[in-house]
Image (cartoon, rainbow, N blue to C red; front, top):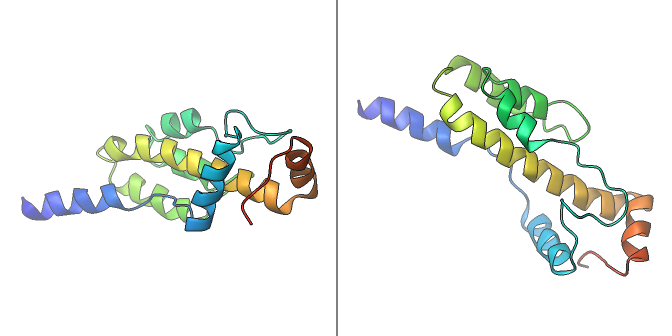
Length: 134
């Protein structure tokens, strides 16, 4: 019984997309200026849909496979999708919220990259009188 609980706990902890400390600071700094994923400066388009990622993870690993492909692809989600596929139907318990949270993290990371590295994105941010941390 203890092995089963440990196994489930391990899966609850793994498989999350994280932001670096610098990315977290940039997100907070942008939020203090009124720039969020829901209200970006300029024409930033979110690459991942959190609702779709969560709903697709009702199917074994579907949401993770969705996050592993597309504009904001995070290739580590191929592994997470495979693990969710193996542990289905139990993986629905952690897979649905995990995919939605990871989609938000991917969107945040892509927003930072858009404003930092894309000339159009950095121009749009400057046009609105906002900036990233230096």
